Every structure is written in structure tokens, then in C-alpha cells.
Amino acid sequence: MPKTYQNPVYPYAPPPELDSGFGHHPVVIAGGGPTGLAAAIDLARQGVPTVVLDDNNTVSVGSRAICFAKRTLEYMDRLGCGQSMLDKGVTWQLGKVFFRERQVYEFNLLPEEGHRMPAFINLQQYYCEEYLVNRARELSAFVDLRWKNEVTAVDSQPEGTELTVATPDGSYRLRCDYLLAADGASSGIREMLGLECAGQVFHDRFLIADIIMKADFPTERWFWFDPPFHPNQSVLLHKQPDDVWRLDFQLGADADPDEEKKEENVRPRVQAMLGDDVDFELEWSSVYTFRCRKMDRFIHNRVLFMGDAACQVSPFGARGANGGLQGVENLCWKLARVIDGAAPPALLESYDVERQRGAAENVGHSTRATDFITPRTPTIRAFRDAALELSEHYPFARSLVNSGRLSRPCVYDGSPLNTEDRDGFQPLLRPGSPPQDAPVKADGAATWWLHLLGDTFHVLVDGRVSTTEAERLAGELEALVEQVPELGLRIVGPVPAALADIPRGVVVEDEQGYLSARHDLQPGTAYLFRPDQHVAGRWRTLRAVEVLPAVERALGRATTTAEEVHHVGA
Image (tube, rainbow, N blue to C red; front, side):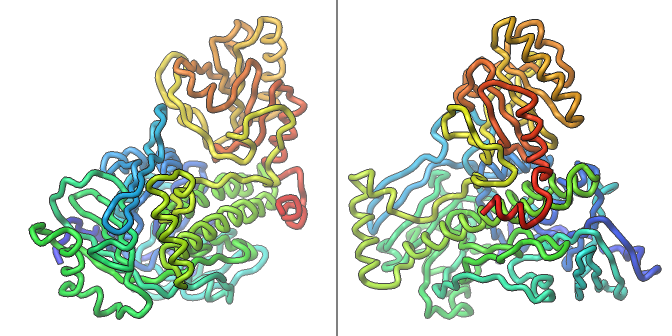
């Protein structure tokens, strides 16, 4: 098969522990895929060194995950890879649904203006991994990337973990304070620890075919139910960079995977879809089944499971890589603060609480999508087909059509880190919510709101208040800055003189009004943002005596045991 992409080969280097036989590190990451690499970069940016062990010496083969959602792109932007992904990726936000021979409706995932990142880009996973490797190598003072290093044994204890690692030159042992298991759906670490990942197994087989062709199809997501060229099944079409197109054919449970992925069998399916006059080359194909499942707990002693090692979902809805990376964002700021002593170890329990919610949400959406795409009985199929027929003319029916509810970041409702609302607010951006971007000016220079957040705690306050209120507000903000060394202040202006020179304050101008609208701002309104940019609390009137306990709660200091954290989050 022709290839548009040549996988880089990264050099193996004998690790120093081969001579000493043993080494100790604060954090070891098993797995050099997107989640493992992102975790290493995130921790490096916060001053935490890591060792990354990968049993291979290149990036993924085949396009694999291709749809990267807006929130994931915003996180990758913070890691230093977002612009590379945007430059290479294919941007899209429009999807179309077809039933048999006709289009029944279309949807726009981001119809409003005022966002830096698009709703989605399509980008082959190997490009994403390459950009992450390049960034990790720029941070080599903190990231020790070890290729051809395979974890072969794990001894997990409450105070740390000991690993045996095999290399081309022999084996060695590592001890770490925390092990991040990012070693994929067939996680060897999970298996060696005797832990389960429970859920539903789907037996239908699907064919992925990445083809190279010149075509004038728009850059949209097209999904067919029961099309004439592939009757009684479903088909998905996506455009990728390099004139590569992803086709996904439902095959049924009885399909022979070895036969179906042969080029002489793939080609007729593709030709029937595109027409006999369309020329294409087959780049990569694979036949897959999938499971929607997750671990009951993502923490085992000091082993923390991430990405596909913790939870697997169907590809319908692009929830795998996106959910995994959102989990990394959730974990790393907490782990960094636990390691440097700024937060108690109990804070890590909130990773399990919050990401269990995110994983359950993703599993639920994926399971429902699969049930709709692959109806198991004639009755269910009749209901599905009726919903599709009605959706062409009746908007209510479109909510019943499920070709994959596309990935959105989880709102951590009920998290023990939240300070719940007591004042009147719109539900958008309630505590636990991910942030909303907006074009703003900071100290007169054009920028984006999310570029002013992240990596530490921030308070947003609407400083467009009276002179008298500004003097009171200035005193409250100065008290906050004095009590919380890492706190940053973002003050929406123009502001009275009393607020112009608050320590660590940045005056933000919202000339287009997006920031105010998305945050339901009124004069004096305040938000507390966590280091992962999620909302920790909000108030109509800022008072330090209310914000300071919210910071303590967000750092896990409001509860002292894992049992209490889980009780609050239940």
C-alpha cells in the first residue's frame, strides 16, 4: 500500500539503570501515546520530571484517532502543540446525516463566532503523536523519553511502585512515587495487577479504509444509514490531511476480519460508494470490534490509570482520545501540587471521582450510539428507521437520531472540589464546567480569554463598578493575593483607579461582549478557575472570606480522607 506518511524512528539509548540495576523517580509514565506524552509535557511545564517508557520506537501506525474536539485543542494549545495541529488538520463543524438515498438533515457544532479553536479538526493520530514527541524533546530537562523500554513486571504498594523494565540490552528495575498507566486498551499494567475493565462487548465488525484521492467533497462529517451502495449497514466519511479520506463501513458480526481487510475485498466496497470513475489508492485498512467499558477505580495504590487503559469506548462520537486527554488535563495539576506539597494526597481521589463521571458519560453515549447504529432486533430497527424518516421534516425527531453524540468535555457536577452557587446565575459555566473562550484585550493587546487562564488558580472579576465599590473590591483582591501565592487576577474593565494596579492583576477589555455574555457577568461578578480552567466557584459579589474557602476546597483541603471525598462526590 502507498503511504503519505513515513513514521519517524526514534533512537533507543541504554538507560543509566542498566549499570546500577535500580533507579528512583517521582513519576514514571508507561506508554508513549497521546495521553502518556501529554501527561509528561503537562507535568514538565509545572516542574515535575518524568520518565516515559514505551515498548516501541515510533508513533502509531495507521490514522487511528482522527477527530480532535475543541476542548482538546484548547488543552493542546496550552501544551504547545495546538497551532501545529491546527495548521495541519482539516477543520470542520458541519455534519450531515443520510438515510438510504437522501440527506435527512444537517447540524452545525459551532454556529457562533468568537472562539479561537474550531469545533473539530481531523488529523491522523500519528501527526498528533509526532507533535507531542517533538514538544517533549524540547522539554528534555524534565522528560526522559525511553524508547524500546517495556514494563514486564509491576509491584504496587501503598507507598510507591516498583517496575521491571526490559530493553534490547537487558532488564532493570525502577521505583517511582507515582506510576501513570497509559499503556492502552490491552494495558499490561492493568493485567499484571489483576484489575478488571468491565462493560459491554459489541460483536459487530467494522472496516476502516484510509484512501488517498482527489475529491471535491466538502470538509464535513457524512454518516449514512442503509445507503444503496452498502445496504442494511452504515457508512461514515471524513476528510483528513494529505488528501486522505477515512471511510468506515459496518460489516456485521459474521464478517471475516482477515478477508475483509484484503485490498481485493476493500476496493469493491469503496468503488461502489464513490463510483467507478473515481480513482483512489488504499493507504491503510483495519477491521475492528470494540467494547464500551471502564475500570471501577482509576487509582490502585499509587498507580493512576489514564486514557484507554482506564476506559474504552466506540469510535462513534470521537470520545476516546478526546476523553483521554481531558483526563490528563484533570490529573496533572493535582499530581503536581501533591508532589510539591501544596495539596494533600487526598486531592488525587478527586481525579477518580471526576473522571469516573466523564468516563461513564462517554460509555453511555457510545453504547447508545452503537445500539442505534446496529439495531439488534427488527423492532428496534423499525423504530430507528422511523426516527430517521421523521428527522427530515421534524426537528424533534433529530434528537432521537444517534450516529455518535460528538465529544464534549464533561461538566463535573457534584465534584467535591466545587463551591456550589448561592446567587442567581445562568446554568452555563456553573461550578465544575469547562471554560468558554472569547476574544479579549489584555493590557491593551488582543488575545484570547483562555490564554489568560491555566496552570494556576485565577479569579475573574467584573471591575466595571462604582468608585466606592472599586475601593472595597480592591481590598478584597489584595487580601486574596496575600493569602494565595499562586493566584492570578483577571479584572474586566475599564476599571476605576482603585483597581488599576492590584498586584498580579491584568485588566481585560471585552469590547465584543462575548466574555460578558458567556459568563453572565454583572458589575462585581467573580469566578474562581482551577488550574485546568474548570470553574471552581462563582459569586455575584466577591468577598475574600468566601473565595478563600473555595480555593481550599479546590485543593482538596476541605476533606481529609479518600472516603470523605468519594462520599461528597457520590
